[in-house]
Amino acid sequence: MCAGSHLANRELYTAFIRIISAFYIDPPRDPKDLPILDALECNALPTSLTTEPKKFKVGFRARDLGKLKTWMEGSDERTKDL
Image 1 (cartoon, rainbow, N blue to C red):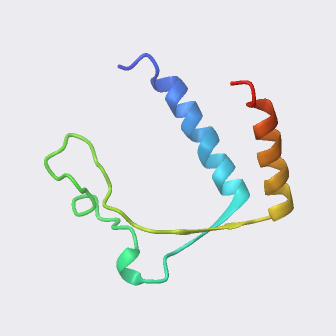
Image 2 (cartoon, rainbow, N blue to C red; image 1 turned 90 degrees about the vertical axis):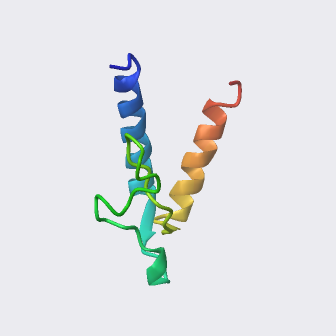
């Protein structure tokens, strides 16, 4: 098992929570751009040991543009010296 898997899972959780709390996620306008949800048909590389989903589209709309700008400015300030 990867020694960094727990850290990676926490980072993904944080990223997903931030996306979900900051944006509405809209389906694509064109039905051909919808994700494929079938476990066998969705894999872009069918011979792979892991699943790599075929490309799909979604739209992102800010839930509150003012809050989003504040969060981004705060993030920029906290990471400016990195």
